[in-house]
Amino acid sequence: MPLGNDIVDLRAAARHRPAYYERLKRSSFYPEELLLVQEYESAFWLLWAAKESAFKAVAQAGRVDRRFNPKDFLLKEIHQTEEGIIYTIDCKPFRFNGIIDLEKDFLHALSWTEPKPHFLTEVIYSEETDYQDQSSLLRNIILEQMSKMFDDSITAITIDKDENMIPFFRKGDERLPNNLSLSHHGSYLAYAFTI
Image (tube, rainbow, N blue to C red; front, top):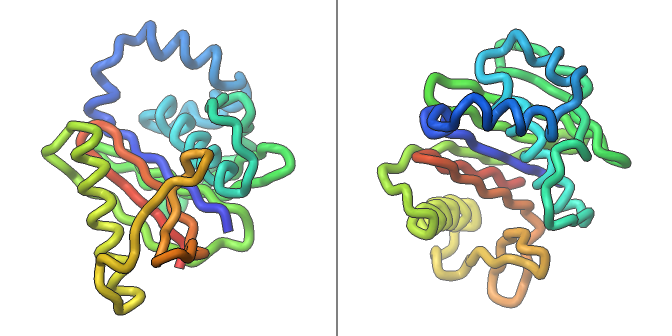
């Protein structure tokens, strides 16, 4: 089951100039999408994260174009529920459903194809902002979770990337069937993997 996630540190995102967003808005989003999200706080990033998480899910499904083009994804519907902000995105031939957790300092988007997979996800705050250090920290946290699930030592499971740079779990010579999505931005890290 394809599963993607994206995290946005809203404090880090606020450092960009408004002209940056206007330019990106025109090249990334359709007018009808902007109408759908206009009532939401952090609408730009909400739409971006939903599309980015769907892109990561598409990549897991084997449809890989190494370049993320937000206009390949069309937001069809979005609404607030008690669980979070629920959305649907089309990217032919796929339809993705998803949820966004919008907090004061970050937003976290998850996208999947139906039926909804069982998954673990976590958002982590990190004082460390170096990309490599964040990546290492995130991988260690995930491997700890996986080793608990498999009741195995942490050294038995590793995280690799395939030829398209899609992360996956490996145990010895075996590629595990659990899909994995990693994300970090600013001071926030997030992961999601199917169980």
